[in-house]
Length: 193
Image 1 (tube, rainbow, N blue to C red):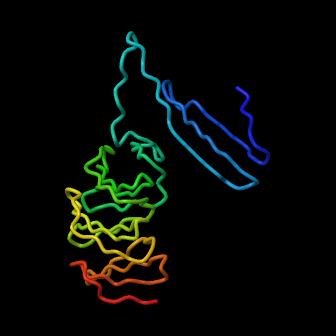
Image 2 (cartoon, helix red, strand yellow):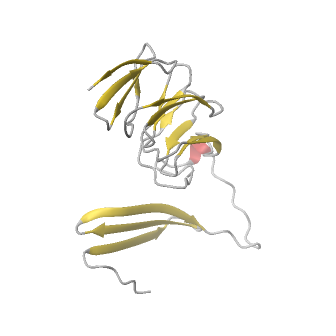
Image 3 (tube, one colour):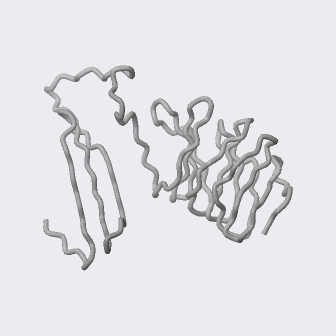
């Protein structure tokens, strides 16, 4: 296939065989010298029926850098995950959702849907509450175990990643040019412009 690309766009696709049934695949698009899109994935071939199954490697047999699991959301993931004390991985996505994933298997524990993109990193309170900002101008407090909303706090614009102080105060910046200090019960402590 010979794709017709606009001027200034460069497509780079690479792959390498990493095992008898797997391939690492990378797909990168550069536009006018800048990275426009990047996708990396591992492709696994299903074994033929007559091919004997090979035992899965034990966790302590895996080499450093080995992909342990992947989880695909319905949109881009721009932020870093937050990791709970029990190993649960919390992440936001451009599919408007916050996900809780089992850190060992990558299995979804729960998801919570906001009204817009979640491109901020979640923060975890001392009691396990997950705090996350959304492009719907709100900060959400979610029960870390089951994903139900405890409360939401509306700002004047897109919300950035929250931070939590030792006294439980949630600090969050917003694109409305304000810094908010929010109490754990969702009341505003103060705002600064």
